[in-house]
Image 1 (cartoon, helix red, strand yellow):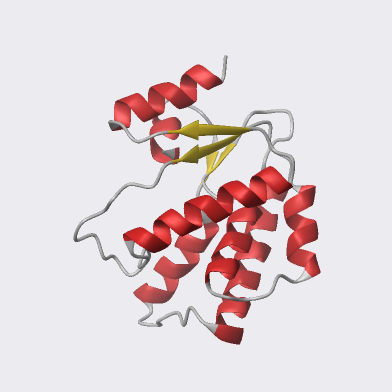
Image 2: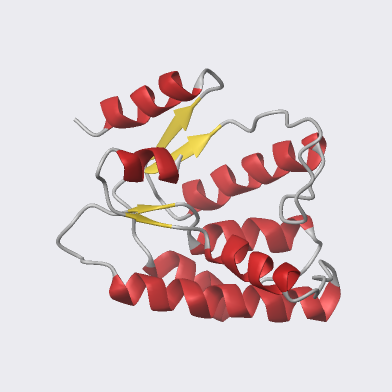
Length: 159
């Protein structure tokens, strides 16, 4: 979605977790998505996210592919506890709206980045919604549809 929004001329911030995973895969490094090594990975994601937030123009509407709340959802899915600095960072990052796109069923799309099953993606979607709701954010649900339909729903919600 952020690529489509960017193509519309809107400023976007890509997912820092995806960028880190792509960098590691390019160097032949696999990411252990369990235990303390996954917490270290999430800490790196948080640091990069904070750096990206610091570069964003606060006077301009910016679309974030992922926020800090998503890290909380990924940690919860992995059965990991939340450190207070993650919770505090998620609470400090305020969005005008959160566009929660229903997960798509993705067939044969293993890219080393998105390794979740359909059931895990569904659970993540629920967890992300729960975290943003607990943070008091306005959530705009974007149901499944064509790419054009989903983009249209996001753009329509901006007016």
